[in-house]
Length: 238
Image 1 (tube, rainbow, N blue to C red):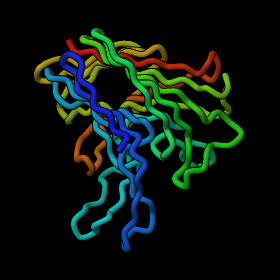
Image 2: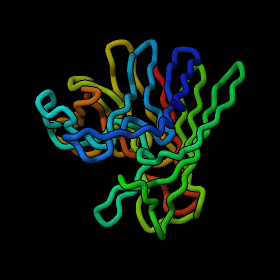
Image 3: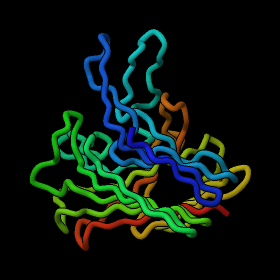
Image 4: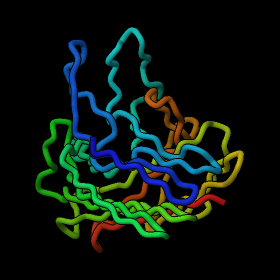
């Protein structure tokens, strides 16, 4: 299954590179879960579920039992993506991602080698397509890093997408261009980045996905187009 479970201090996580796909008679497209070396679950004992994977594209596999996604389709799986000429290239379609990890008393570190592809598993051509992802779990923080590995510059904008689960009603504050805070009943979730952070504009400041059935704050970290195309986001809980 290529799904790894991680536990360090109050953090619980899964990293998925599961490469199985399937189809049904009613849905000709490939039906996929979280994959591509994605951080498909991140949970903190104090504030609960923070990241949860979804289908990369919401499909009504059982049309009589599924509703339309309200407000459009926005995947909740954390990811790297580039949009070019109306096409979406992301690690969420990469069925060949390689995941390794190392652990000691203080931390667990995952390293992911992945390629951005479209829904037909074709890699982005004539541009940056190969990336390294790193997930670091320590007692007091989770750190997510993305970096290009096949070129220092990109013609298109590459972004690290972090949809942090948060129902409508929880206060969200942009403290600075690199710090966002989300107030939850039992603590404050802090997202800090080495690059500017933005929140995708929506009517209620949230996106919703029917699978897993949750709202999230769609946080976007845009990778610089040069200087190694590297971005690091740190999640802590106060």
